[in-house]
Length: 575
Image 1 (cartoon, rainbow, N blue to C red):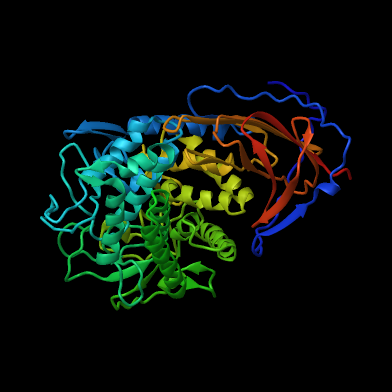
Image 2: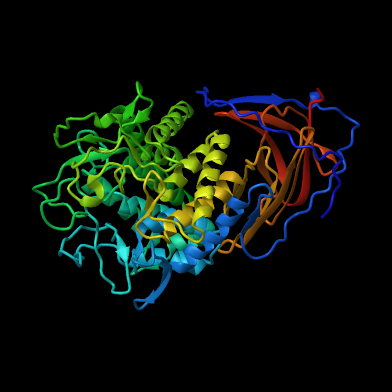
């Protein structure tokens, strides 16, 4: 497919300081303002090859192109298959951990769906479904009976079942991972299918109910966990036993923003899956739980004077000799991605995360906590030092959530800057993604970390290129701005693909695309480069109705486009 373009000049974006925008505004340009009798410019733009895998190319940024090779090698190094009387496939967190972990699996699932077939995603989740706790299930490690619906932290070739009882995110991660399988492959038929005699949807509802029964604080109505950092899994003062398991005499109950965000997303996903199946009463009950949690979270955890959520609220009285509420947790980004926040909160959180990175002296996004807990607060050596491990280290695993929040909620320029920071770092150690890093980017832990590989696939595909595929629809929001580039997204579980090539200039924006989405029409949201003012929009040879929407610092041109192979051209207002 070839077209001809008359002007190859590229508009240089004027970098602006991060501001605090108000809520989303919409400006509609009516049809009467569109010139008639004009022809679109002749354009030359070549679509990338279709192929059978996901690839991308940014001519000006080879370091972002190189990220794909690192992602592929890291995921391949962590592929895991075994048989427990039923096949299990998935990804280890790192080659040193020969098991599937539900937290890591959930985080990498969507990114992996753009690279791997159905079995690699679904068979792992079905492994967790088969090992879900029943009335008689006891943990392999300590004989603990968690109760009906609880989820094992891991699934391994030894068949052992065990929860990390300090945390309260295993069920919510499990629900989200199952939601991804439902979206990209399984659909309603999978939700109806039975695992050990119980329908998948009933097992998912049971997992959510386990949290409400066992981990909801009766006073605040928030989900509780033992005192860790925010998302961390290590008790702050373990005196005996496994530091990732509760010891009742030592437990210090807290309610973290991290757990509330994941639970809010899980309740909304349960509502959608139940509603799709016709279980309207159950769907409504999960919607009600989500809204109650939303209100409780903003009541108890939002700090309007600071502009970010507190890391956690102490439910068990515990006095600190430092201001714990001043800590900016990366879980604030998780709250944005999970849909817990509004546009005003997003703006303030993005600023807080950016300022905490500067204050920490970090060379890239992903500082998980700043200021960190002081020296010696945590007993565990890996946590005792400020800036180490879960106590303020840099994690690409969580940095990816921050970038998704920036791209998807109106801060694409900042997202691109942070993506380049990570790409520059990865270029210094090709084929390695560290579990975590010191503030000076010295690598620590494993160097083949699958969760980070999966989330950064999602950052590039869904964040930067703005492509999200599922059996239930296509979302296309190219956020390249003044960068030219192309991408082919192939999603093996759904059989869907989309490829596009994008060329910006001062006078025209050109987007050639091709997709097999079954939707006859779908919305296209095209990020406009700074100071680009659209005058007319053509799809192939025909003028199109369009409007503009401002979200955060981003301005999008919105237009409805058909499936198939087409060319969109946007002409700028003549100075």
